[in-house]
Image (cartoon, rainbow over all chains, first blue to last red):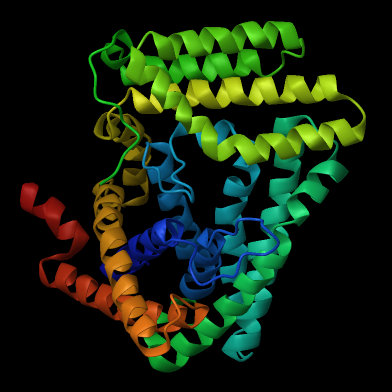
Length: 185
Length: 205
């Protein structure tokens, strides 16, 4: 299971999440002034491409680096401070979301990659992440759940764009470099 | 690789990592239940004073709050809408104090020391027959991959700009991933050819 190739791929996707945060507003149109980071795109891709266990490990590796002080979160944030900030729920949701996305990719093995990746990224990358992120905001900022949900909803349109990109990219990789789609290997 | 660490010789720099992490955990648990804004104001002043004890460049590190500003504003606004601005003040003071305190540990601890302190958590991996060296190798790989990925992306972007005049597009994502994945396959092969991640351990033994 944990052969060299898996190890390199896990590190690769952790680095991808970091790189997507460092890129100047990658490729994603900014919606109504809400800054959209591409980092959740990396989380979705990790789950969809690597499968549940490796996908979650890649995200955990990234969060580990952030926790020990690498300012790799979008906007140059990092260190232990981000785990005391209201968005901590989203960070905790990331590895779980990647796990669920990977699981969906695996269990829908007969479905074509494009729709399967779209479903996996929406359920894992949006559904699960917000399911954990919103109570996190409510808890840390002492807000009612509804207010926290309203405050977080502004990011959902951006996340839907990322789902679309994840699906297209997964389909392209499935054609161009099929063995890199470890979740279906 | 970039890091939050602020080089220095202050008393906080000399404290042991474990002590700092332990104190941070205790302090966070104590601060979180406080709901009196005046008391939280005092806590915040103490935290800022701790930054001040690092000297002027310590106070400059309060910039860690800048990326948090819009989030804090939204939270305050949501509290006002929900009916109580005083609760908003309390929540914001608490958040700012906790984030600053955690950040203080990060800026006064070298990344290597922090990693070493946390690596002991990986020791139980031995039970599952997995080398605890693997996480260390993975960390090194991430730190090396990240700048490489950025340079792959920027060369794609330059080519795209030369063709279309536009600076960047989501269309670059797929070729970006394909190119960099192909590179990572080479890295995996090179690693296996050199005995693999476990080979490192056998050599030492």
